[in-house]
Amino acid sequence: MEALLSAFLAAVLAEIGDKTQWLALALGLHFRRSLPVLAGIALAALGNSAIAATAGAYIAPMLTREAATLLLALALLSAAAGALWRQKRPDPVDGWKLGAFASSALAFFILELGDKTQFLTFAIATRTASPILTAAGATAGVVVSSAVAIGLGAAFEKAMPVRGLRLAAGILFLLPGLIAVLIALRLI
Image 1 (cartoon, rainbow, N blue to C red):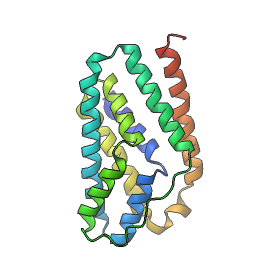
Image 2 (image 1 turned 135 degrees about the vertical axis):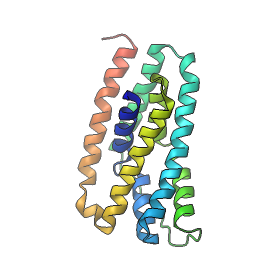
Image 3 (image 1 turned 90 degrees about the vertical axis):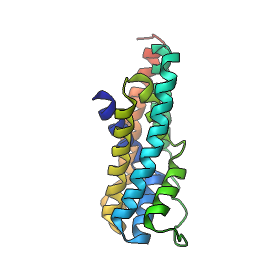
Image 4 (image 1 turned 180 degrees about the vertical axis):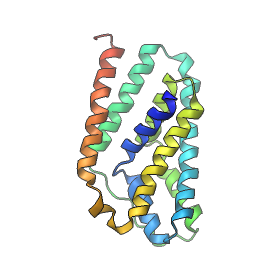
C-alpha cells in the first residue's frame, strides 16, 4: 500500500503545472471530447509507469539500501527543480488528425517518456516490493492531474493558482529530497 500511495502523491505533485498537464488541457480543448482524451492519457501513463516500475524492480536487487535511498533523493530533488522551474507549454495540437484517443495516447507517451514523474516512479519502485502498485499509483496520479486540467478546460489558468501550487510542490519535493540525501550518506 505504501508503494501505491507514495507513487500516487508523487505523480500528482510532479504533474502540477507540468508540460504534460498543459498538454492534457490543450488536447481536451482541441478535441472537446474529454473521455477519449483522458483514456488515451491513461493508457500512455500506464505504459510509462509500467516501464519505470519494471526497470526499478529489476535494478532494485543490485542496489544497497543506501544507494536506493540516494536514487530516491535524486529523483525528489529533480522533481523539486522541475516544479520550481517555469514550464514551457507544449506546441498547439491544432493540426493533429489521429483522433482524440490516439493523439492523446501518442503525444502523452512521448512527452512523459523520461519525465520527472517517470524518474520518481522508477526510484520509488527500487525501494518498494511492489512494482505493480507503484505503477498503478503513478498512473492514477497522472490521470487525476490530467482530469483536473481537462475538466476545468479554458478556466484552468484562472481556477488553479499554478504558480503557487508549483512552488509548494517544489518545496514538498525539496525537503524530503535533502533529508533522503542525508540519510543515504549516513549523516543523520
